[in-house]
Length: 574
Image (cartoon, rainbow, N blue to C red; front, side):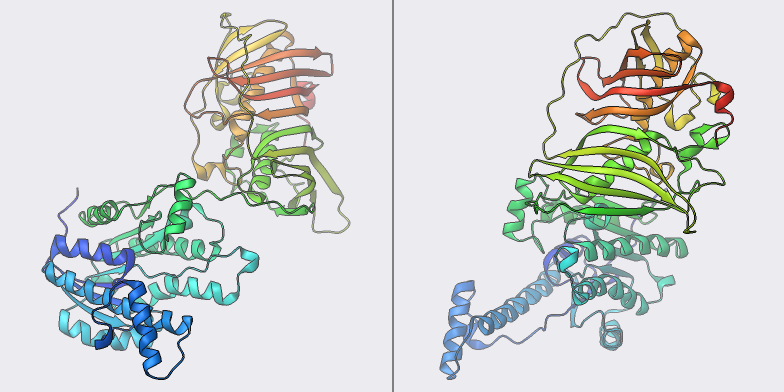
């Protein structure tokens, strides 16, 4: 059960970055709510304002007066020197305004000019403020720096500047207090740390460390109210007018000051909080930049283990976990999308299953996804893709597991409509799974077929619903644009058809083409219709559609080729 907040007029908060920007607005809201005390930390100097600028507040007027001042001294003003002094005067004014506003709200505040990455200077300067205001009850870590660049353009100094303010700053702040006596620890993280954002690798890393640090502190000091808030972009602070316009064009919500500050107060209002990390804002989707014409080659290495991929325990064939073919598809599709943010998977052509990946004693040490760009325009990108494996020993053979061609599009075509959708129901035993002992061997992670609507020698239609699984179960194969779990369910209807009419089973061998027009919904009914095109003693070929009740097609597999295999032979596969 929650308890009333312990903040009162005697509470002292140590606040980094607290005299300006977003943190300033949050401090003012807390001061209005509780009339408490603050030690504000910032790098800016709090200077005595010269008499000759006291009546100049407009930015242009201020710069004009500074220029006149330099000229009166016989010095030649440069844009850089004028801007520097203008910034310094404006910064001091903002700090003074913050201190005055806190006092007007009934609170009390001290400002310390210090770099929080300098632990010695921070500890020395805090002594006097603590003696004056009292023991620190809470920390609000709002300081941060930006150095947005694509990773290939970042310098070590860029990384250090961004990383140190967040991570070293937190470490130094905590070193100045007895954490066991701390009532509050509030960290201002960012959605860049949760979702990622182009050009902000260092910022994302630093903020994600804050998130994980919050969990660690909460675990070791459960009585402390710990919260890491992953803010989206605010209407002030590091978000410039130009950036606001870009966000609006990309349909990204901006957090109003009134809303953001109220959310913080509400988070502080309950002491016995169970939630350590709060995300406030949508992911910042990357813009699509103009493509460079040269065709590139990529080699992406991955180690596969059962421990890292719990879902594999629900895909066991002949006693061994086997990587579903659809997971190999997801591996390729998701990797290509990550190389080109803003482009989405559209199709595979001639997807060949050459050697399945079986989790047994013969597994390779690592697997390699090789991608070769074969065509690239501003509307589409095409790759040749293959997944191979090679053991550490140079004598070990190199195995080819999967090969295909893949296409990404900037704009996916409108979904076609399937007009032949048959709702006529046939009486069929719908107990397909039977805990992995039925027609379908799949465990809960892959169980989505709910009932057969109709079945004949030409086609089968089934009703499906996939409830989703937790991210930790998905391991290396997370659901993104391409969902390997629902796509695997798409193939189940062929297995049901084959068992129903011929008491046979098959393993996937080839998909001539797979097109995806829309993401397959989770926790909503969808339908799969398979048209049987060809059947012999050794193979079965079908076209398979996933669609909704209205016939809108989500995904279409053309020429799905399964190799028919005896159940006795299946038991011998390793």
